[in-house]
Amino acid sequence: MEKKDETKNGQKYNKNAVNENKNGNKKSKWYIWPIKITLITFILSAFFSLGTEIVTSKTGIIIASAVLVILVAISIIFDAVGVAVTACDLSPLTAMAAKKVRGSKHAIMMVKNANKVASLCSDVIGDICGIVSGACGAAIAIMIVLSLGSNQLLISIIISAVLASMTVGGKSIMKTVAINNSTSIVLYVGKLMSVFKSEGKR
Image (cartoon, rainbow, N blue to C red; front, side, top):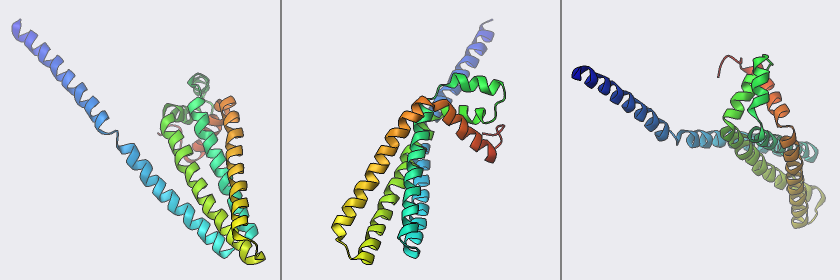
């Protein structure tokens, strides 16, 4: 009887050791996401910067301005997605998943990883677009000065002010929209994701 008890106790001890190892592994891997997000930021920043530099150097003021508006719009939209994910409730999405609504499983996955999704959307893509749009605005200011011979300081100040007001005002409006319509926005993004990845896969 004593040997059996020892064996049982030994099994319990081993299970506890395994659980401790699992918890230890989870804690030891906390740094993986910051490394991933840093690499993603570097790659996306280089891509956006290169694309913007090519466009602004090879085209005129009109196309460069259109690129600037697109960058601001991307920054606002992704910031809204980040807010919607953090504000979204799982209950309606779970009900939709039970009814096999397209995109609902992806939406649930996003909400369960809200901190990572918000970081990717708001901090990475949103901030990258903000930085690149600033560089694009500076390039447009130089184009205007070279074309019209205007005061460079005045043009730079006006463009910076317009750019900042568009970005901040747009994000302020979309934050309210995202909070009030978080489920619809997250589900829509989930539907877009389902086009590129089946819902049976993570």
